[in-house]
Image 1: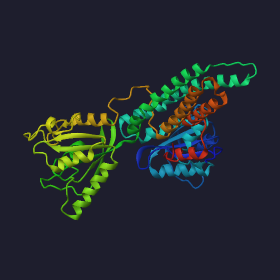
Image 2: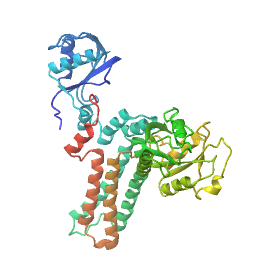
Image 3: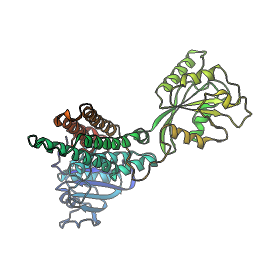
Image 4: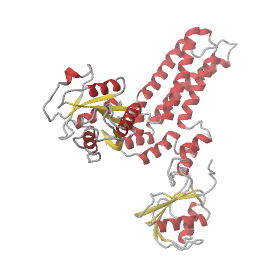
Length: 458
């Protein structure tokens, strides 16, 4: 685990050349090291941008004009003394400042160490710390919005409310244990069941949107499948708005999987164009068909493409059979051409297809909406509405809920005969799981695993 006694330093801006670059220091010696870098004898004014020129420090001979801002503890990002040095964004200049700071006594920060210190100093809980990384890594506005809502504490507040109600139940149970001989009961079995049911409902509200939140945070794999020449590659290109896949009139043009990332309705999706599913005629095509079937097996959603301009054949019916029972959207393509069959007569009952033309773009907006709907993200998350986007959070809330259900059910089976100690053990387990979500109860190995995925300088 990282040492928190050292003053740490890192370049806080991305690698490469830019108009500006920032070097960040945090720790008790941050201000002194920054002063030595510019040859300054007087302290920096708190939260005031100070213009200065770099001076040689150690073996550093880099020169530049910089702006230095000091954020004294505890009113800083990390809760420690923090200094940010803004310089011209030359890698040579920034590396020189970094070397000078290390020569002055700082240590190079580990990935995520600034945010770890913010967590350890109570400036962020673990949910908010993880949201910092999610916000940095966001590639769609929806991902950024979900991450920022967590950073602002919407999920933290929801977990805190559940913890508070659970704490009240536990306190009343423990009070009953403290006065066994007097026969005091600070909460009846009926009140316990009622209160636990209410808390379980609160957990359910968080978990019901966990699948949607995970898709927003992590994206999803979408496989375009269908018989040869139904327009999968054309639809692939249309969704990407780029000529990425080769399109010809020759059946079986696509032999391998073609993968691209695309934003659809605010979701970051991985689209996979696959070979046409049919009885292959050569070894290369057979391998392509096998890969297409494997892609269908692992995809979170299948886009089953059919061609309305030609009669359905055995290959089309086979694709419908193979994708049956999986999450899918049936797309009827080439609606700009005369129809050879009617969807209501040829498709499974209850599965309304999306009519599109990859050539003209007709129906593509509706297809995006249908994809989002099938991925359980058809509605945009409301502002300040808690959303569970992290698999770790969802698992811990699920375990906390299970412990409460176990205690409630045991209480219901034995009425007032169940000793308070047994129920209290289940409720203490539930509380521990909730504390792991926010980081109030976390192992050093878990913290290291979470923070090591951060970029250096954050």
